[in-house]
Image: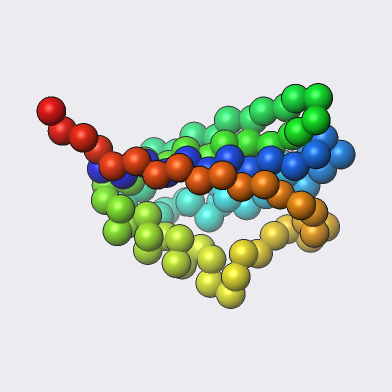
Amino acid sequence: MFISQVLFESTPENKRTMEKILNVKRTQLEGAEGLLASEFWWRETGNSSGFSMVTKWQAKEDFQLWMKESHKGGHKRPEGADIEINKTAYQFDFVDG
């Protein structure tokens, strides 16, 4: 089992664009082979707006294949998404025992 978490953050002025990006990510996950579960968490503070995308996969290889397929042609953003986005990624492997 494998878990990926990515935090996407920008300024509060970019809230609408961040919402569009969240919806694109959600759509990209539909029907992904090996995907066990996904969750999206919204966060707003005084100086940032964004979301966390948490995905749970049968295997790391399933996640890597999805990444390769969903990012063909580079990182595509919705129209009007030429904004600065801070991304922080975390990846976890299951520990048995």
